[in-house]
Image (cartoon, rainbow, N blue to C red; front, top):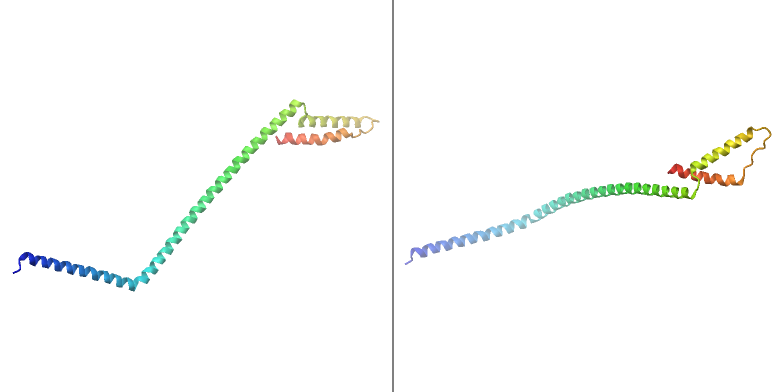
Length: 158
């Protein structure tokens, strides 16, 4: 005769078999469903992936544009600073050259302009005197004129 323990063990085994059978059937059902709708699911995944790629690409392009804009700003700022420094260096150089010429006794642009004015005033006085011959332009004056202009330009620039 069967005991109660044997009977309860048999029922538990039957339940386990039924449960395993149901799990197996659920797996087969899922597999069949995926075969039927697999292509639809695959197409949906491809579509979602394409959308994600587009969004990612847009974000990357925006980030790149921002980086390019920043770099352009940095380059512009650097150029402005470099130009300012170059101007300062040029002024220092001009000042030093002017001091060196002064130490050597070279006339400044102002000296040359004053001398030119004196020469012109003297020429005007000579023209006013009766019987005076018109002054001749000498080679020394012709040679001094371009040098005076260069010196005058230098003093105006500084």
